[in-house]
Structures are given as C-alpha cells and as structure tokens.
Amino acid sequence: QVQLVESGGGLVQAGGSLRLSCAVSGSTFRVNTMGWYRQGLGKQRELVALISSHGSTYYADSVKGRFDISRDNAKNTVDLQMNSLKPEDTAVYYCNADLDLTRWGTSENYWGQGTQVTVSS
Image (cartoon, rainbow, N blue to C red; front, side, top):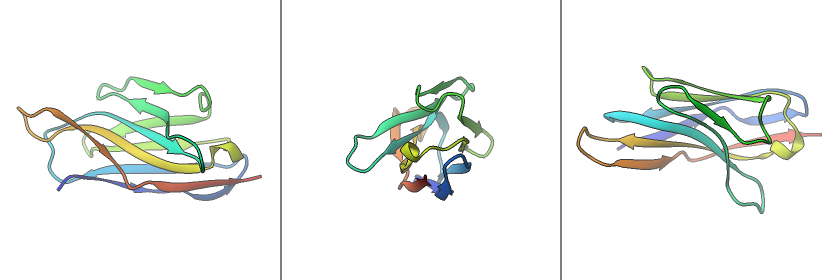
C-alpha cells in the first residue's frame, strides 16, 4: 500500500528554522508533482509550496524567500526547509503528491498524515 510518510516538525522560537521531510512508501511507477500544504487551527488548508518532477517550484506569497522546497527523485522524497519562522506559520503541515502507481494508470493524489509545526513568539 502506498503512503506518504512525514518526519520533522516540532516547536521552535520565532526566527528559527525547521526541516520537514516526506517519503513515498510503497511501489509506484512515477512520482509527479509533490508539495506541502498547511492548516492552522480554525483555518482552511492552504498551499505552501509545490515542486514538479523537473524541479520547477511554486511558493505561496507568505513563505517566499523563507521556505525552500526540494526533492530527490531517486529516493522519492520531498523536503521543506523553513527559515525565519513566524508565529503565523504555526499549523499542521501535510505532504501531498500525485502518483502514477502503474505505467498505464491514471495519476492519483495522496496526502501524508500531517506533522505539527509550532512557532512561539
């Protein structure tokens, strides 16, 4: 069974850094776009950053210049380096990926279980 397994997160003071990692667990033919979303308490889930299989990236305006998304296609992993963290970055962060499980199948969207990031002021 294919899963997205996240690691990282935790508690950090404002101005600090954290790194989130996500790995595709299980057999898959191709990993397409990967990304990170977040959901603050009482808020809707929002896009943080995306990275295509070719390395093209997109960032939400709120994290541009502070966060960096990267991936390792050989290991099917995606990381999110978060610098200059602010209290408003506090949220549950979710890994997301579009996966082709077989050569002929359609792409399916998967979510990780979520990891808490808390930034204290």
